Amino acid sequence: MKQLMKYATSVAIALPLFAACTKDEVKNDEIRLTTRVEAPTTRAGQDLQKTQFAADAKVGAFVDDYTAGTGTTGATTSALYTNHELTADGSGVFAASPMYFPANGHQVNITAYHPYAANANALPTAFSVQANQSADADYMASDLMFGAPTAGNPVTRTSAAVELTFKHLLTKVNINLIQGAGAPDLTGAVVKLLGMTQNCTIDANGVVT
Image 1 (spheres, rainbow, N blue to C red):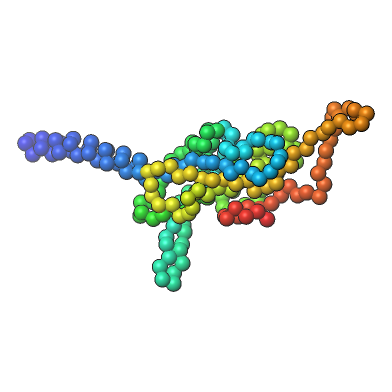
Image 2 (cartoon, rainbow, N blue to C red):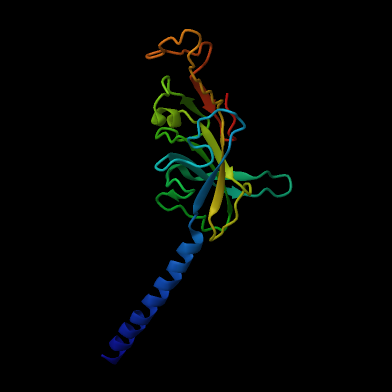
């Protein structure tokens, strides 16, 4: 009976210590991401997502385990998180299910793209702009961006948030219709851009073709 009581006491003491250690490790191992959007070099007047994602905008993130090369051996990567969905809050913070740095202590490469597509399980991936972008939602669904850590890849394990800088990859065109001589009625006027393509491909380096 004495031996049983001693064993039970030891377990009761050990469990809180184990829980505290695990909590600290989780805090340090979690990959937390924030964001900024690089303002495009343009005179176009549309300010949607000019310097920050709109609230509820979806982003897809890729995180790879990075192993540095040694001697004649080049660096290698292996996927940790593929097309991980992130939701912007409008102020530079993402909400998402947790991601963690690898337990082996390796650095990671982080890349991301916008807008999120559920079937984009790898980069390169195909992308198409909306034919009609008169609504804000359709414009933002056509605003292709690519993001990577502001400080560069690879990223060393850290408890601080990792900032991603996103760049607009497509050309923005704003069209303003102004009444000319005779003040014609422009209600219902339609403008078509000819010789344009709606489709492209974005690769793992943010290059569009």
